[in-house]
Length: 135
Image (cartoon, rainbow, N blue to C red; front, side):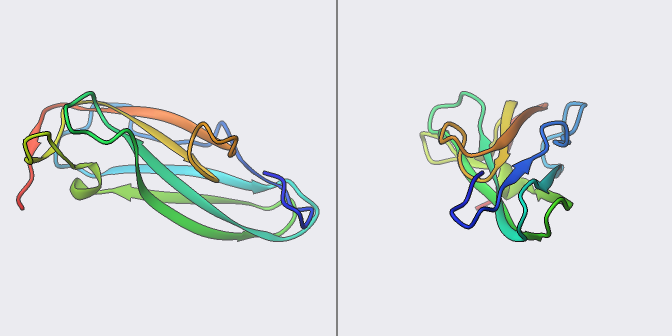
């Protein structure tokens, strides 16, 4: 992402790590990505994690579920890790029930939301069954 100050940061497209196997409802999900400063000046980047939910009535299109500010010197890389717990994976259904839905979840990690020309990478994981969350 180009900045007026001449800094440039990128999200390493090969660096997104998500669970390969189906996740048991209620277990946390760990995600990590490598951020690299490809510019000639040191700078900060706010790495954001957005989660898109399975197709359930009431589910949000996407939700910001984590962010980390990192400072990088020119050419430096840093691994940024997120842990999504049950409340991060949860949603409120159309009838007002807090749940973790079964199905496929999409993750976008980058310098902004997907579809905004912000650099980033995407991936997905699957949760095995729906569970109710306590209020």
